[in-house]
Length: 72
Image (tube, rainbow, N blue to C red; front, side, top):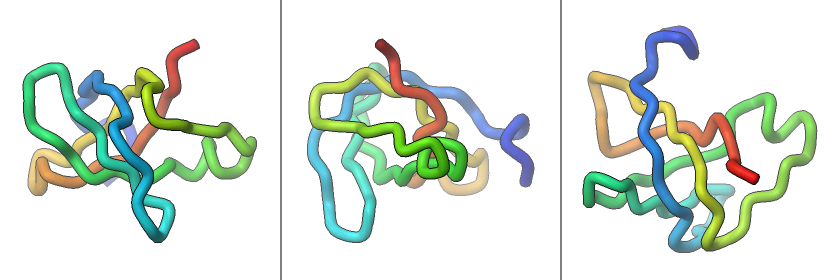
């Protein structure tokens, strides 16, 4: 599945978990487990609790996702 096939959801980082995972509370309500996408790791973009992020979620498993963008 490519990056363009993911569903884009806005949310806020609630906490940082072990293994490079983040708990992201979406605007619609549920909390997702997300990790950084490859480009964000490559360019050393830091994500801290309270940041607004865009999460790409697979239509097959909507409980997990990739953080693809951090809002300024």
